[in-house]
Image (tube, rainbow, N blue to C red; front, side, top):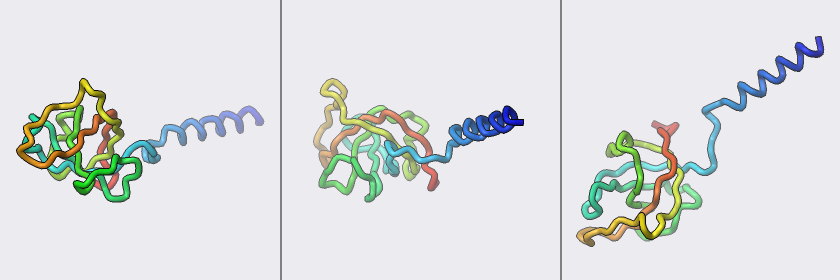
Length: 115
């Protein structure tokens, strides 16, 4: 009987650890705005106001994405993003035709729970 209880307890812990609805503190809510004017095929993303850890800028939390998968390049799409600052060899040159939004390198992206 004791072995049966341990098996049930172990399975419960295993199933709970596989829960995909848990939040990941490294992911931040954002909205894909659309293709930017002057940085090739890169899209603009806007992080929600309450996203902590997003680099501070003067452009309402708007950034050029680097490495966003094509299936997420949809204007108005709500996503959750893990990012880092780009390395110098990853920064995309821009034409300066529009605002000089900073760039972030996307390391992980999933559909937002609020979509």
